[in-house]
Amino acid sequence: MVCCVKVSPARRYAHREAFPRGYSSWSMLLPVRSGRRLRAGSRRGRGISPVIATVVLTGILMVTISIAVYYSTSLIDMNRQMMEYEYAKEQLTYAATALEQVAFGVGGARYIRFSLTSTGLNFERHPDALELSIAGGGSQPVTLTLRPARVAVCGGPLVSTVPRLLYPEGGSLDELGKLIVRADEPLVLVHESHSGRACAYLEMYRVRTVYSGVMYVGVEEKVPYNYYAVHIINATFGRLSGSGTVPLVFRNLNVTVYQYSFSSPSVTITARLGGYQSLLTLTGLPSAQGAVVVVKISQVEVSTG
Image (tube, rainbow, N blue to C red; front, side, top):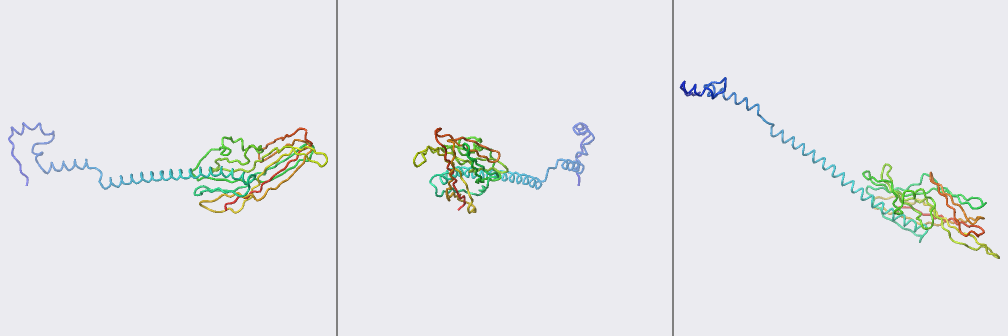
């Protein structure tokens, strides 16, 4: 039931300007018409459903959390691989010192432990052969050939590095092309590079030369000769297996000695390995009647147990 209040004409005309144009005072008082217009306005101002808003916000939150977890896990894994690779490089430099002691020091055996989770320990033959030539005066040159071995430590897929020399410390990459060294220089090198993976290599291809002094040879008349020593490491691989914590073992099997005589007091040693070549002339006592070169090849077994 609709009720109305009769308004006098004077009051109706007095308030006519208060109503919007096109509407009468009677129409504004009718609940049916006014209700219809209010419902139409409410439809135009309606918002998003709370259920839909909750689903959208939850999806955005889950995607954000997934991305954060993925990147944080990758960062943690990268740091772990980097730490393991750095530790393995440090152990490899210790292994270089241990190898020299086993080959031409106290002998026996030495081992270094490696922790292998993402890092790999590889045993390789050098792709090129080492050719060593010793010549002096008019004597026939002596030629020796062997295939050097090396030990490689490679990091995980998230590890990166740049080429540099690790042992001896403070050296440059030019040491890699120096095949012949003197008595005060290391025989073993450790360097790293990135070729597919970050790897550090323990190289054993260098040749050490030592002037041992003058020795007098003869029964009735003593004749002076210059004595030179040449040191070479020839590594062979033993048992290679294991996982987790693996010991890298160096064993001195024996030392093979060759002696060569030359008519001149000085000798020239030439070494070639791939694209590298080194030449060194050894000069002792100029008045010596000749030279004797003693080549010592240390046979070292490399294994993991």
